[in-house]
Image (tube, helix red, strand yellow):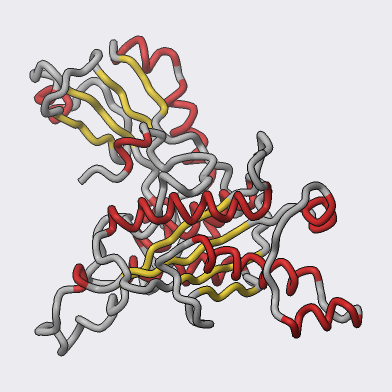
Length: 315
């Protein structure tokens, strides 16, 4: 996506012209009318629906990309050019675009595709999928973001103690509201989903087990059954680390109950399915922006809009 600005904009309303199928700067009545305003901009977005049509090929996309980079276009437009979202290399892009009858279109498909592509591009290796429920859970999403910050610090403390490396493990947070899919169809009279309790899902990388075990003295809590399995040599590295992390979270996060339902850590196996599961709220009629992704506390290498953190969750 590219945005073209006439000048440095003030904090006021902005008139936007949206380029669709062509990039005409002359003989364009709509652009001419838009340019009459003091503050205006123009935007071009690669349209997924357009690129899924039979008469659209990769040659068309390359031509559009080159046109946006063409210095003659910049000179003739007399407006500054800013690349808002970096171009993402899409593998077999046209083959993966959903058809018109596909239910995973628009916001859910594009979000899942963006996250999945980022995992591949950044070589992220998620080893654990956590589901955390709370005693007296939050209903306010902003308060949940604050709790996520504390939970992230607890997880990092478990792996690194007080000294964190420059490149720690990457963690992604997803919020889910209970009852998200209840108030649909014939159930329109049920209470609004905004009052539903929140719980979270976490995708988590993991440091090398032998490094984690041998680098620093650390206090870990495990069951007697697990200790017996260690002595017998039948306890796996995954089992030891997951049980220790579970107990660590329960001890240091007051809102997590001590029961088995408090923290559930499993092998993510198919990352694609986990990404789809954590984004299922996008298919709900009660969807409210992208608040289910905690952008501020997730280690996403590229924010979808590359804007300051303090603006990500603004209403």
